[in-house]
Amino acid sequence: MASFPSCLFRWDLLSFHGAIGNVTRVPALIRPQAQEKRSSVPEKKGRCVHWEIIGLTFVVLTFTNLLVFFGFYKVNARRRKLSNGINEYADSDGQFMLPYNLGMILLATADFSTENKLGQGGFGTVYKGILLNGKEIAVKRLTRGSAGGVEFRNEVSLLIRLQHKNLVKLLGFCNERDEEILVYEFVPNSSLDRFIFDEEKRSLLTWEVRFKIIEGIARGLVYLHEDSQLKIIHRDLKASNILLDAEMNPKVADFGTARLFDTNETQAETKRIAGTRGYMAPEYLNHGQISAKSDVYSFGVVLLEMISGRRNNSFVGEGIAAFAWKRWVEGRPDIIIDPLLVQKTSNEIIKLIQTGLLCVQQNATKRPTMSTVIVWLGSEAITIPSPKAPAFTVSHSQSEDGTTSMSNVLTELSCR
Image (cartoon, rainbow, N blue to C red; front, side):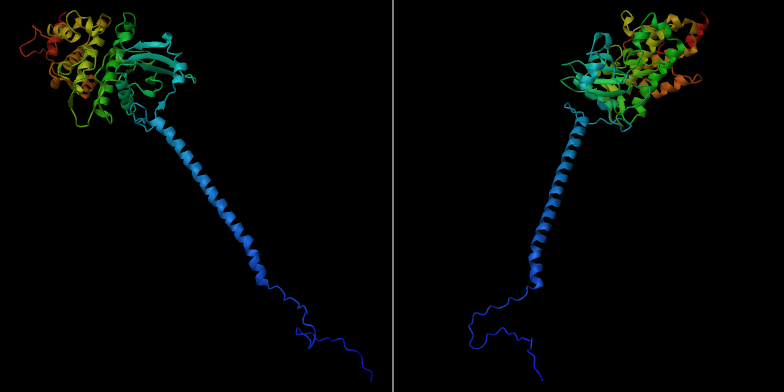
């Protein structure tokens, strides 16, 4: 049987006996674990880069948010705070009053041109302005170096919290480049004194219109004294501080000297007498005593001016209160009444003369409240008290207790 050579070989890592010992060994195969270990290095680097991106993004977003917050804070700070100490700008509806840009006001008033001048008072000048949207405004530019700074703070801090149809509305303010400016709603018919003391325009004030104005002023004062969230004494009520809108509705204006009272406060004293002589109550003028009855006195003077059509200071040697009182005790109140209203001489006008005299009595406690005046104006059936001598008056024709009755006056009138 033939034998064939075998193809099987026997391998061994050990050297043959006696052979040369430089046999090269076949290296062992690389283990999978080692490969995984080396590949984990770039993975860790990827994770680090990922966290660095997240951290950088967080820092950028935080910084951006801080910038936005700071920007809003600065904008609101400018709106909420003026350099002269006013800190609140929300009105009674919680809406912020606009801080007007000086450039906008200069454009609206044509650089405060004399053609746009509406009037001038002790604290500043009032101009008419027209905004770019066509809205008409009244701009009061306070006088530099006067007590205007006090008036500016006073009006802004008070009027933003008041809202009544018989009070002028403050729209905004401007406090730039040493300018202190108040922006009001525009009231087209200017002030009451432009009508009641003008020979031609006064004829437009029929008795019905005058009564509406008197009642509107009274309602505005009731709101200030009793109905608003604040208790405010105006201290400078007069015809020039009463504005008339297109329908001749009155709006009490000029709150620069107004005094804020605590809710339970009824009287205060001051050494700073502010107001207009002839309209100031005697206890205020002589002793600095302020109360709601101070405004009642001023209202009485304005009421008598409305009935007579004459200024308080137009009577030689006496004011309108003294003149009206003397005619009242003489039983001749018809002399008080504006000749343009002679045809309308009636119990209604006589009753308003009596109301005016009650408001200007010397003793403040004897004067009615403004809410009482409203009741008297609204009812013909109510019998009102007889007045006593007003302030700054010495009458020789009054009765022993200083009074005269309305019935006596009406009796004498009916006999004429």
